Amino acid sequence: MEEVFIDTQLIQLDQLLKWIGVVESGGQVKLLLSDGLIELNGQVVSERRKKIYPGDTVTVKGIGTWKVAVE
Image (cartoon, rainbow, N blue to C red; front, side, top):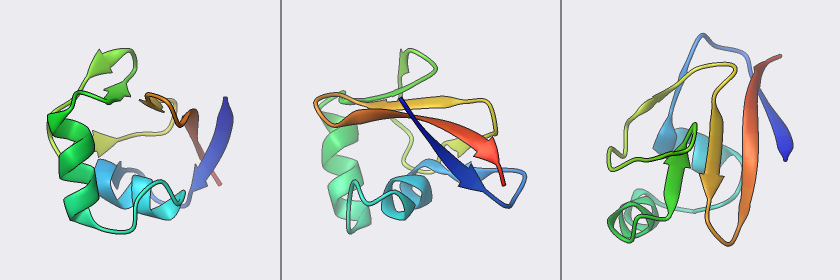
C-alpha cells in the first residue's frame, strides 16, 4: 500500500486517480467504476466524484492500493 498526500480537506475520486497516474481521463474512471474495479475502504464504489478524505483507502483491482494522507 502506498501513501498519497493531499493538501486539501478532501479530493474527488476521479481527481485522485488522475493525480496518482492511474487514469488520464474521466472516461477511463467511468470504465473502471462500471466494471466494479474501484473500492473505497473495502466497499465497491460507483460514483466518479465520490469524496475521498485523509485516512481513506482506495483500491483499484489489479493496479494497487493507496492510503490518502494530509501533506
